[in-house]
Amino acid sequence: MAHPDVVVAGAGVIGAACAEALSAAGLVVTVLDRGAPAGGTTAAGEGNVLVSDKEPGPELDLAKASRRLWPELLEGLRAELGTELADAEWDPKGGLVVSTGEAGPLRDFAAVQRESGVDAQVIGAEEAAELEPLLTKEITAAVWYPEDAQLQPVLAATTLLAAVRARGGTVLSGHTALGVTTSGGSISGVRTNHGVLPCGAVVNACGPWSGEFAAAAGAPIAVLPRRGMVLVTAPLPESVRHKVYDADYVGAVASGDADLQTSTVVESTAAGTVLIGSSRQRVGFDETIRVDVLAELARKAVTLFPFLAAVPVMRAYGGFRPYAPDHLPVIGEDPRLPGLWHATGHEGAGIGLAAATGRLLADLFRGNESIVDHNPFRVDRAEVLA
Image (cartoon, rainbow, N blue to C red; front, side, top):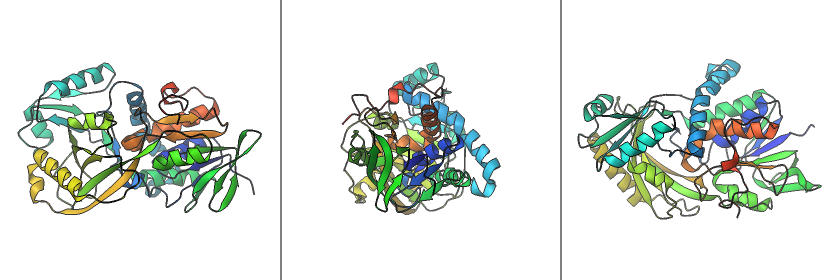
């Protein structure tokens, strides 16, 4: 049997995007996952494709590229696979960021984003109410981001993987990547719980487990799990029309604090449910559902949308996000071990950044001009080398 050119370890949205981009470039790809495809971090995501929450710099550049790519990529896959296999519930609904405290910081943040090419429109309370009629009247500032979008993360990942299969690739569930084999100082295969799978290269897209896999491969990186939780309401008639979050969300995203941080994020889904977040906490892989965290999320959500006080909660879930100390993804080949590539460290932005991450990795793999400057995401930066 012919061996794959590349094995992608991890079938979440980042691994799926890398596998899709590599297979589109003509490579034979096998994707492994310890569980079911899209069943880990991706399944615990909200599906955000955001430019509104990122400061000017390399992550924003990657986010803008990904926002351009996602609709093009999905449209191309619909043409290739058919609508039934390529429905990711893409919704370019826009985002609304509001403040109920001091207005200056939010407006200042929007100003620096505009200098970086983001469409960030400062609007008044009346315009905000037109966008979101059920929003609290207590807001002091609002910024409208028409470029923000949403998709269904599991559908997005499985659509990408369907394309890999259609091009002759393979997706294997229940295959845990345990390490690598080498020959002549380069990758020759991936060790799994089902034996060794020979290949010419491996992509470490193991999400929160990327640090463990990298260490097992002999090239450790500092990528850690960071826990987040989400509340889901019962299905409702139209209620929240856009992604809406409080201005303190930006600070929580950029923070490296290990202690619990919560900020208000509210948005609806195509199924009519309302997703309420968000929390961040470094607790290792502790899966305990903490009621105090969920209560704080609910309390803050009601502050933005008072009508939610009377809405029943259907369920809650948590997930682990791959966190890098400098808040930048790790994308590219590892200079310590030829043939070992990394695509990880996106934390809570993986859904939005996936399309550009896959393209960037495939560009680098093929030696083509990269879609964005790859240097800020290099593996051998001091903050990441463990």
